[in-house]
Length: 77
Image 1 (tube, one colour):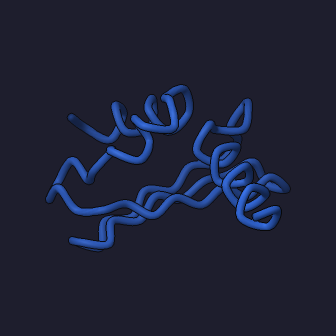
Image 2 (cartoon, helix red, strand yellow; image 1 turned 45 degrees about the horizontal axis):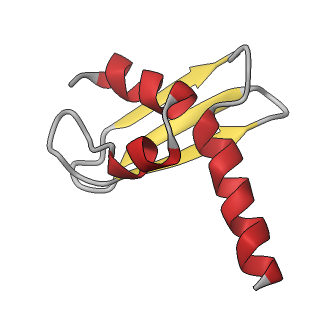
């Protein structure tokens, strides 16, 4: 797996695939951020500290949608 594969999963993967994705460099856990105003995203590895940033995405990645749905479910519970 490489960073392009991680990007594909974050944009088009299922919730389970996104939860399972790991850093391609060290196998560490990843933290994802999406900024709708600038349509940019950031991926941070909590293991090795690698950071991947990109700007100008064409649509909101699935990881952002799933995270928002989780927050809504937790607020209701």
